[in-house]
Length: 163
Image (cartoon, rainbow, N blue to C red; front, side, top):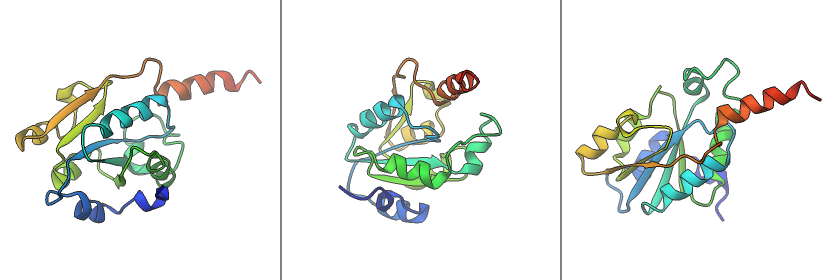
């Protein structure tokens, strides 16, 4: 098994390895992955089955902070989040992105398949139109009921004063 840190690439290296000149079918997805849970794992495993390699783009701390999930988020730093995602067997490559959406990175990579979890409609997925324009697919993986980081954080907060 590859060490998780070896799967985490600087953006320029990720584009060099998995960009448009690649010889394999690339699946792309992205997220904060602040607290990795079953919903994430199932989505990533399903995504991996759609191609030859799965590249996961993880929001930097600054990018995650701009998503409006609260001033204390992300709970876990970007490098740690990237390495935890990289530790999953189904994940081949991980890179960070600092923009509000991964649209620019998607344009650089030109993945064959763009995957998002079921909390998105296809018309809300950043980069979906681009991917379809070059002949790629956009796939929405159904959400696992009761599995969300925000819900998990809220449950923890609700129990924190009980102790």
